[in-house]
Structure formats: C-alpha cells, structure tokens
Image (cartoon, rainbow, N blue to C red; front, top):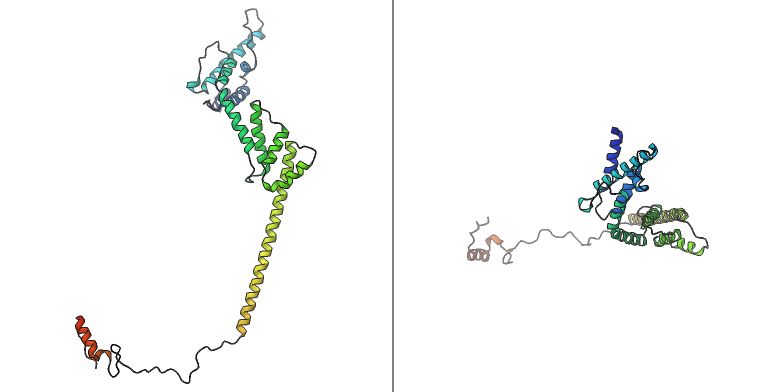
Length: 290
C-alpha cells in the first residue's frame, strides 16, 4: 500500500467518533461511510465466500482473499473506535457483520431513547423568527429524516401540519388560508409559500414603521412651529416694570443703633450690657471704639 492510501486510511479512521454508548447511531453511520469510501465494507455487505481449494479458479481465490482482508480490517477499525470497556472478544473466526449486530443489540435501548428525544423535539419545535422560516422547516425535515433512519417514517402530510403548527401568530391568516383549501401541499411547496408570506409580513411591518415615523415627525414640526409662534408673540409684548412705585428712593442711610440691646445712641462695641455678657462668658475684652 502506497503512502497516499495509508494517509487516507488513517484520516478516515480518525474521523470516526469514539463509541461511548449514547452515540451508537452516529458511530455506525460514520463507520459505514468511511469503510465504503475506502472500499473496505465488503465483509459488511456480502456473505463469506467458500474457502477455495487448490483447484479453484483464480477469480474465486482472489474474491476470498479480498473478503478476508475486508473482514479483518473492519474488525480492527471497529475495535479502535470503541471504548475498551465496550469491546467484546474478537478472534480470527469472528465475522465483522456479526460483531456489528452484537454491538447493535447492546445499544438498542439507547436507540429507543433517541427516538423519543427526536419525536419530542419534532413536536415541540417553534419558529420564533430568529433565523428564517426556510431554515426552520428544513431543520424539522432533518429531524424527521433521523426518525426515518430509526424505521419511524413521518409522512409529508404530517410534517406539513407540524410545520404549520410551529409557526407564530403572525402567520394566522396564512394557516386559515391553507385549511380552507382542498388541496394539500408537499413540504417543498410549504417552504415556498411560507417564504413568500414571511417576505410579505416583513414588507407590511416596514411600511407601518415608516408611516409611524413620518407621523411622529409631523407632530414634532407642528409643536415646534407653535412654540416658535408663542415665543415671537411674547417678544412683541412690552415688558412691564414690576418694581413698586414710590415717591422717592428707599433711604439707605438708616439710623445706627446697638445690635445687642437695641438701644440708640451707642454701638455694640460700647454697649455695657454687651461687655458684661462677654465677661460672664469668659471672653476677652474688646478694644474701645474710637
């Protein structure tokens, strides 16, 4: 075997996920794809040919040798991609096809659990508008195809009804229109009509937003015009002098008196009562006023 084939074989085997017990379906799918691409799945597809004898033609001998090589490599690839705790005894007489069936029986319970998970996912899927309606329905189709791989076929009519029920309330008129017509749609027709309806809803929403924005702008302009008119009107009116009208200016030179006792004729510094109060409080004496 040349270096290129060895590289392809190694890369293919490394791309097979390790069988952990809960991923049997994915492990088996990847195993069959890689072995088929490498032309090593003969032992999984064909029964073991009879052992040739010396007088057997070269064609039969080559076919037997090719099958034995395929069986041996299939077993080794499966052993390499299975956790050690899951590996069973393998001998030269073990058939790869029988070994694969034995593994399938071990993990059949997990496969049933996976069917329940896929069914719950398919029935509970809802479109919230995060991506687009085409991707949403395609994801539902992908989930239905996984169920088909478990021998549980979901008809197109059932998938169409599940997809319609997963659409939001904004598609209400669209659902009523479908229920009123006699003909049923295929899944591909449903995708086409849903995409058109989604584009229409987006267009209506955009037009409503533009109308609301324009109306809001006109309201602002009207309020601004009213405000400017009120400002102009107020500027034209003469400003009245609100100061009280008196015969003369207020007398700024008020009589001076004592701010401590309230008597006239002396100031606070010369007030005997003030000096007595300071002495009582223990405050230092003030210098006499000139």
